[in-house]
Amino acid sequence: MERLPTKVELRKRNIPLEDDFCPMCGSDMESATHLFTACIFASKVWSMITRWCKVPELVAFSVRDILEFHNFCGLKGRMLVAFKGIALITCWQIWKARNELIFSNIIRKEEEIVSLIKSIGFLWFKNRSRFKDVTWDDWCKFV
Ligand SMILES: [Zn+2]
Image (cartoon, rainbow, N blue to C red; front, side):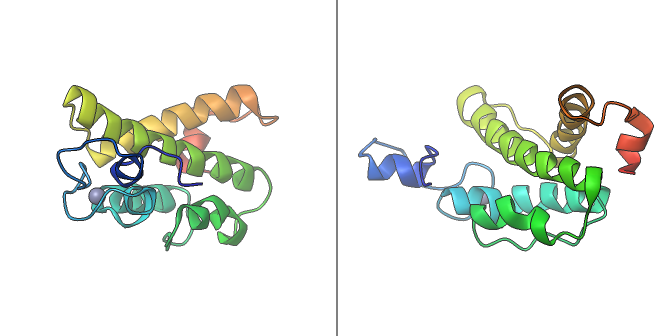
């Protein structure tokens, strides 16, 4: 909904900024679309996530494409439920990594973000979904 306070959105609200560039890659203006889809950092994270979840590579041109990807990823049943949550957690972790870089000067590696997504996803799926019998081993194999 264009409400996430990326640099492009902050600029529209007349917030003074040093620059408009994406802090993760520096190669384009920081919009939500860039940050979550085109950014090389996000692309690497999505690539590892889709490989782990055994779904096709994500091709997204908007945040909406990410939010609707589960409809076209070929998963069913509990793996579909899991992937839907993982996609949201992935966006959340990309946003957190961006904020940690801007506000705390902490540089996160893509592998570190994927590990966080796996562990947070597991805790959510085991404790907040109806699929409480999932084991860590099965979760890591995404079966
Ligand atoms: Zn970027």
